[in-house]
Image 1 (cartoon, rainbow over the protein chains, first blue to last red):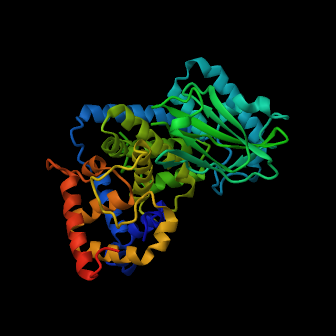
Image 2: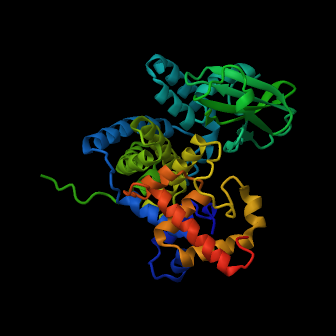
Image 3: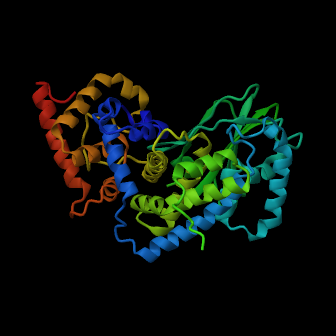
Length: 236
Length: 197
């Protein structure tokens, strides 16, 4: 059993079995499961380790506030794959995006980075949609495919970005956004479905020690036909 | 005065969310659920960051992942274990991102597959791996196994392991890892005259 075999669902299923269940006993012989189970116990019954109660309470309060925004934005997401989502939910994407964009613009000045970043993460790039919509020949999301940007893989010399193909793209563009969600760099004309950002030859304005959002756009004859959700990478 | 009754279980809150993910009831259930796990998640995140602000950011990231995964939660499992796996994976990824260049030398388990080796390596060395895992199981204490697992297979740093395992001794996980390495080498050496694979 490797760490990758222990998906949340599988680990959760195994942990729900009685300790003397044959399958649980078999799993317990794996160091992966054993380590995860021991850590789980510490997670559920933690020793705050120097965290004073007021500090913990204040952290909980702050998280509650931050996550309240997430839940509210998320509740308007059109992509929840639950059975209760109406079949026509995706048909409403355009109007939902427009509503979300309008809402974000109205509140724009009041949004700190945290809240804006949350909206970007949860809304699948609402804000970035604003930034890149000028690239798109037709406004709205229906014509743009969702491109899958894999989790960035850190290598000794940089970070490896890879994504799945978006047919019939003939090139790809990688765009980096800063904390203020303004574009800070872009790379055009990539023919492969990967790009390695090397720490020793980064595009100008990518600063060491910063967090940036990265997004990949698939292009056909210069027109965007697919776009990934943004991912965060940290530049050491 | 109305008795509010016992608090709803995590599972029933998830169900309430899944039944009405866009409505008020679903939203309230999700907020309650995230709030219920935010303290533990913050403490866990704090162990990986050692600092409040970063821990808040990491905990927030973890809980967003939990929220986004709620639609696919299946009630046949144990909810705390499901949340923990999501939180731990996110924290582990944070630890790896923060340390992009492999750490040199503090644990020289040079024959174990490294976290950087990738799945091909895992497959190529499946037989070796099975042997190492067997020896780990038979020769190491539970704490040593867990520490070694976290270091060699999950790629966590010594400090992160020390905090995650709540080790209070001065050398933290370092002593555990050194003991584990020593025992592992001895056991593998005894099992195969040629030494470690």
